[in-house]
Length: 97
Image (tube, rainbow, N blue to C red; front, side, top):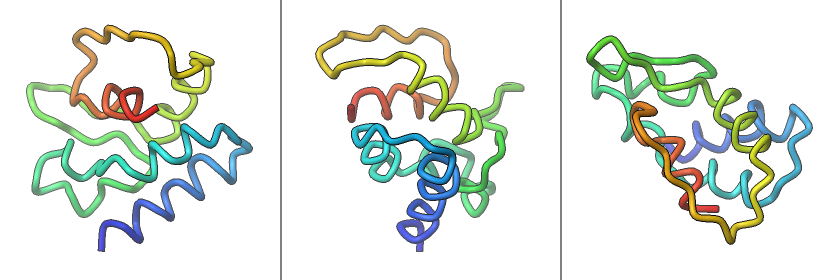
């Protein structure tokens, strides 16, 4: 079930917005976003909206994650230290790249 939703998210939030970085497309297509949100919200994990993750924090919208990652222009050889950024979803995307 989640695979189909993740594929749609990648198409609508990444590819249809003109992002062509194949590593970013592959990473967002692989990382299971539903595992980074509260269980009660997992059915909304692949919608383009921020979701609560507890402690008055939210996970960023998929479009925001895609835009931030693209802006980094990483080659895949960098070491990235990400501190205090929430759920870990962005970190997982970067690790896949």
